[in-house]
Every structure is written in structure tokens, then in C-alpha cells.
Image (cartoon, rainbow, N blue to C red; front, side):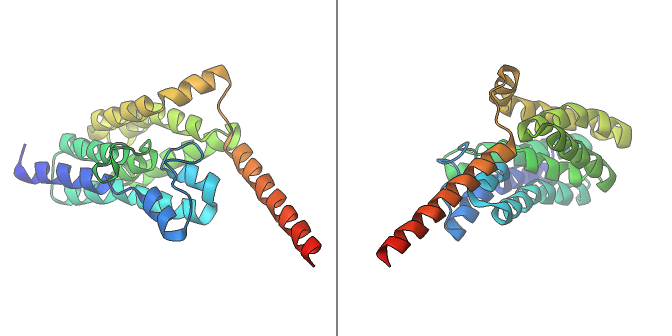
Length: 218
């Protein structure tokens, strides 16, 4: 392994260790995503506790954490195997962030960002698989699981030299979703819009209570 490859692996881990969810929630005054909702500092949990705009910001930042290191390594002519290690390092940083007491998310968006760096055609198919699964099932976790299972086959079709690294990345993603797999099997996993509906209902109740209180004061 060259010094450049080793340096990029360390750089990727440090990039991944920047918890976008925690920082953005602090910036806009939302609760800590590690202590609310699913307690997972990722875009899906931020969507539940903070809405679409905050979740989109987290999603973009998490994708960039995987995309930037792999892109840089690609242009530095680092071999495909080490590109895969760099992608895994970025995901490990997201999952076990050194800056946030090693309590991170599941690495789905960061893994997707790493795949985006391989090619736009491939990333479009991967994103389409996740979106279609979520729209049909309502389960964000199932979308990640199905996409992780199919990603190595997509890569083998588009760019076979990256098949093994992406397969390792998929294994890491599946490992992080073992709790979700068990809940899906038992029928205990919540659909993403169910949680958003509950949050909306709670917000509406609070607004109604506040209005009634104001009317009494008047």
C-alpha cells in the first residue's frame, strides 16, 4: 500500500466522522438525533424529528462524505481495491465517528456517495432501486437492504473491476441493518410516513391546545 492510499484512507475516515445530522440539528435548534426518534444520526431520523429541509441538508452532506474522498482517490490513480477500502473507511467514520464518541449512523448515504464517484449511470440505478423500494413498501430500511443486496450485481454489470469493494461495502451496510432486518421479519418495523404522520398529529394537537389557552387568556 502506498503512502498516498494510506493517507486517503485516513482522510476518508475523518470525513466520515463529521456527523452531519448532529451538527445541522445543533445549528437549527433541533433535538439531538442520537437521543430522539430512532436515535440514529442520519437523514431519515432527522426527517422524522425536523422535517424535509433539515433531512435534505443532512442527506447531501452525508453523500459528500463518501463522494469526495473516493473522487480524490480516483483522480490520484489509486487502484480499485484501495478505492473500495477508502469508501469503507468513509462509512466506518460515519458509523463510528471519532469526533462524536463513536456513536454514528448506518452509513447508507455515505455508501451511496462512494458509489456516485464510480459513475453516474450506476448511481442512478442504485438510487432508483432505493426509491422504488421505499415508495412500494414505505420502509426506508428495506430500501437500504434491497439496494445493498443488488448493488454488487449492478457494479458487476457497469464496472466489474469495482465489484469486490462494493460487495464489501454492501456487507457492511447489511451488518448495520441487522436490527431492522429482525424487526421487518417480525412485522415490527415502522413505515417512514407513519412516524411523520404521528409527528404531524402531535404538532397539530399542540397548536390546538395553544390556541385554546390563548382564547382563555383573552
